[in-house]
Image (cartoon, rainbow, N blue to C red):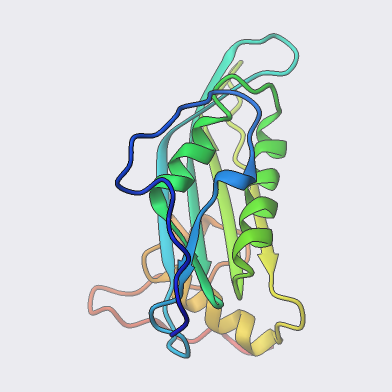
Length: 178
């Protein structure tokens, strides 16, 4: 395992910013289990941003799942990054895609999904899903990534393209081959 660069935010007093999301605050560490099949789910239950038209606050939850490549994201830096959306005006779809793109650029994961579950406005709930794949990811490896992520995914069966959820015994049936 390579040397992990010094983390700046973890264990230190943080300076908080609530506008202008900046991927530069995202910190990473070396994957502690390279070569192993494993996945990470991160849940942000208090994601907020502003409607770019009305300026009204929007509330939602982000579900971030990824199969690591060489790097993992440090959770406090992710929190500091996501907080910067609080007074930032952007549509839900843009927020979810920007988070996915910023994380993919910083981590270079094998597979990453960001699912936004936003509170209804005007009777309509918006639930965007952004997916990023490693360049050259084979169909078989993508299937394995989806299977890994489905093990503990929130409402995994409801996510487009997701693999089946485990049964009560923890077993997952292989997807049908077409």
